[in-house]
Length: 364
Image 1: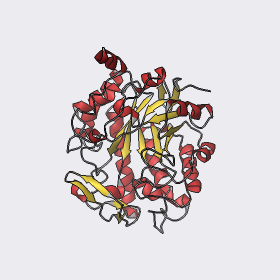
Image 2 (image 1 turned 120 degrees about the horizontal axis):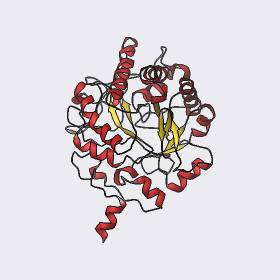
Image 3 (image 1 turned 135 degrees about the horizontal axis):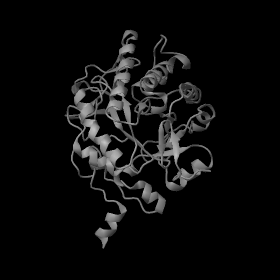
Image 4 (image 1 turned 90 degrees about the horizontal axis):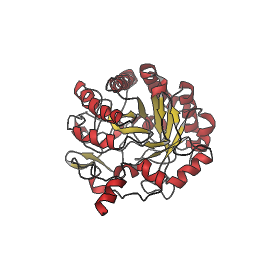
């Protein structure tokens, strides 16, 4: 069986190892959602990953509701991404942009108007805004005549990503955001071609993925799903029917890889009340399958040995361990991260976590 440190082909990408950097919102862009020079340092520090998947990146003003998160819909944003991607490539890395529409999790104070979703619903908890945490507002149901424009926003952002130099894109269809809101029957209350039976609820995911694949190539298109349990108030009554059907549709398109975020019942950042769905997805998805959530080196290797996955995506360990591949290879301790600086705007807790060599020199 392959090792975590063996190469793998992920569509058009020849990854030197099976340790992926999962998308991590970090809030270091401008208020116009333009990437900054600080992001060049951050991503290039982590270029040893088999593949970097960027923080979630907005496809449109309507779809982005996170302060200081980056976008990919304006010329200025594309130009801002170019040196970031260039720095990763100069350091020998590979990088996909994650394409994001937040749906009902967009707060109107960020300038996108009333949030849209599969149906008129209100998310639980509170939104991150420039004025602190505020309760979510009621979203309106996306109209049928608006769906072609939404798909066009994904196509436009995907084309912009390739222009910026990215090796590919990942469609964010997980974690309770817009496509996930269409997938799951807890938030999709529609009675048209996008609601009701599973084949209708996966329609938007299939259409967006096909459109992006037609734009940039299926071998440069990936998808993220979160199949086992509630996420930001989004849930489904029968995930074991829904998500294998979605995965089968994605397999037909021939995407580069499918990433699944599946917390365990004792998860450290989200807990699932539903068993993992990936064994069922594995049977129908024929491309590379990437698993994510609370993996250690040992547990990651066990998943590869058992044939459950082809690669593993690590999230929070990459915040404080820019040299994560080297640490895992050596069996070294992982540095802890500081939650207070996850979304702050400065370099602290972002680009100042040392690599092993620097830690040793500082100790000496």
